[in-house]
Length: 454
Image (cartoon, rainbow, N blue to C red):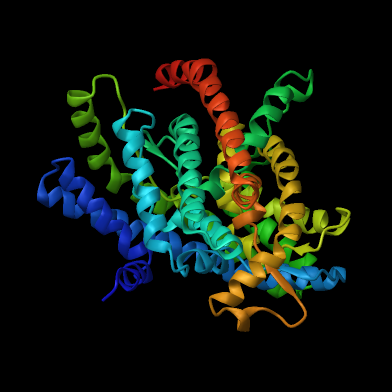
């Protein structure tokens, strides 16, 4: 069996199988007792399976409603969002996958050894974001070295962004020792963070804090997550032209998701806690003052009611943006159900302020429509090259709200398909400047705040 077939077989097992195995390996590596290692791995695996089931349930409920909403509005755009699954298939189907996977892992290991990151990623499935960039570069350049470098450079960006985002995970989501090395979850932060700083300086505006606690305080039972899910789901159903009973059914489904996701998240954290504590003991002994962060799938962030509320409110907003943005051809569809992943870190950035999160997310998503439209031809060609042509509607091109639709991914794709002797050094110089600025100016302040709140 060749190495590509081995990798394909492992990945086809899916993250639900991969995650508990990887967690068990790390638990043993951190010298956790065998019984506790098995229990932790199985708990994490079961919780992750539960999260995925609820998210899939959310997608199956929301997908048809958003499609009907678009039909009701009479929108006709020729680039359809086929979802992250299609883009992931492009990434994992490339003939150079083994080389890219080893490069991404290698970057993580080297950065850890050199003490240039604290993120130890166990989220192998979400390598597909870096693999997609490398695969698209390979399709366009047919250059293995440049394509592998593109994937590795994406990994470099992700690990550092995960370091910088870790205090948000700890402070807001109360999951210490964990970060999220997934570019689709981190992507909106570079746009949202500086704008959020600006918002803090606007008199009056900086006093508006519309969060879940505010909803509960002023609206009583109508501010409870269950009722909010019911109201938002029913509203989306009515906008989709559903009959009242069917719209109410969608509302019940959204309420169920709002109730079940926090329970799965708590289970996930409980399973991870023994490993996280053991990892902290080991690193405290061997690396004084250093905290190793376990990099996990962003599903662990979806138990927060403000995240789901923000995501549901963004559905009609994104469809509205698709209609009014000049030159846009991208129709939001499949990835609307994945919006919780994309808004979660922005919600943490605003400390659960739904009002501000919606404004920041609206601004952050605007570039997606341009980049998704511009790169639709290469995404469509890539999907065809890996045997996905049957999934492409006749007369349409495909894209997604992941892949090269995301600003940093688009930038990396353009850099590595350009004159790399010029573009790559410029990219690395700019990123190094940002790295130094973040490490010297921003992170010390955040870490002080993190220590005080912890």
